[in-house]
Length: 228
Image (cartoon, rainbow, N blue to C red):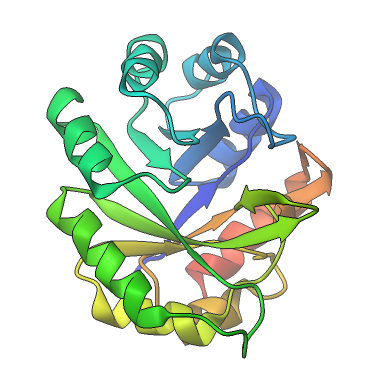
C-alpha cells in the first residue's frame, strides 16, 4: 500500500510549491482559524491554492454553513477538513450543500500521552456518527489544552499510537494520521498505526510556519518507504 502524504499548515506559495515538487499528495492551508499561528486569510489561501496543481485541503474551525460555502466559492478546494467539535448534523448539512466532488474530512482527536484516561468507545461511536453523516475520511490528530485554550491539531504533540491503531481497525473510512510526526518517527508511526496516509505541519518546519525543504523531502521519502 502506498501511503498518502499531506503537508499542512502551509503559509506561502513558496512552501506550497516546495511540498508539491517533493511529491506530496495533499496540500493543506488553515483558513481564518484564530488560535493557529499558521492561519491565513481567504485571499492569502486563494493565492496559495491557485499557485499549485496538487490536491488542496482547506482547514476550518467550526465554521458556519455560510462561511463554508464562501470558502468553497473563493478557494474551490479538493477537500475540506473540519478540525473542531462539529456535530454530525453539521457534517450532513455540509455534505448536502457542497459539490459532490469535494471531499469532506473530519478531524477526531486523541490524547497526547499514552496512559491518559480516555474514552475510546465514545470516540469510536462519534466517528461512526460522522460516517453516517457522510464524512469521507478521518484525520486522527492530537488535542492539547494550555492555559484554557484548546488547540485542535498543529501542536507538535505525538498522539497515542496504540489508540490510533485501534481507531483505524474499527472505523470504515480511510484515516490519515497526524500529531507530532516528523522524518524521524514517521516510519515507526506508519508501521504501528497502518493509516491510509499521514499529515504533517510542525514536524517539517525550520521555524514556526516555515517549511524546511530537507525535512519535507525526507518526510515524504520515509513515509513512502515505511511499508517496504
